[in-house]
Image 1 (spheres, rainbow, N blue to C red):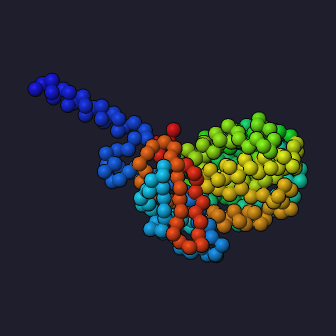
Image 2 (cartoon, rainbow, N blue to C red):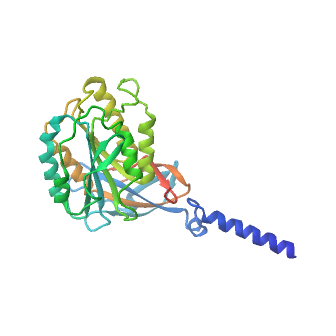
Image 3 (cartoon, rainbow, N blue to C red):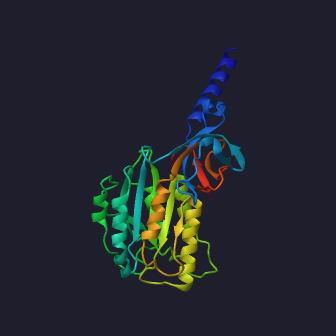
Length: 313
């Protein structure tokens, strides 16, 4: 009898240890149908305002299996809010200076609830120009400057993106995390051969952003080194991969630099006001494939291809 009781205690102890491990669902979560997960998506529609979307209208699959949506709420206005990291490639051509007024106007017009961080891509990392995120948008305006224009000075924009999402300036605020980066998107370590559109550094940046729950948007602008032709194709293709993988949008105007950032920033501003926090019950742990849609006509949902389930790494 004594040995039977000791075996029972050993089994219960092992089970308690297992449930305490990061990424493992508790008994309570499993009984409720899965592990609660929160991610951020955007509601996109040509109609303004967009048709209303609720949790009941959402269609979610995790790893190919239907998942129960338990919540769907806007982050603005009055919601959790947004942390916007506006990142500029320090390798950009001097013509970028003509766009500073458009960016300043964009910062000034940001609604309450959006905290801004400004940083510059240098040597594989993002160098802060503001002291973390600030709700005082004038501080972000004053942090803007003309890029140094050093060819290849970013090392790789994807090294920089990975550095940023892994070392996010805040922890535990619960706000939606969004990156907007201005770069030519060329991975200097993979090259600009238009037939070579696979880069382990791009893949790593996408994975890092997915694990951190960051939506990544980008605007193509050439740097002081390579540009045009194959470089434009390669860079824009990589930026599209990042945005598709994380739920953002890649903006560009052919292979040429935009005459004005204003129309693209206006589109992006509209995106910010249509970001929602979506909660659902997941069955797996770690990075899981995610497919999100809605039955509301005229609406598309922008969402990451993968979502991280479990405790943060």
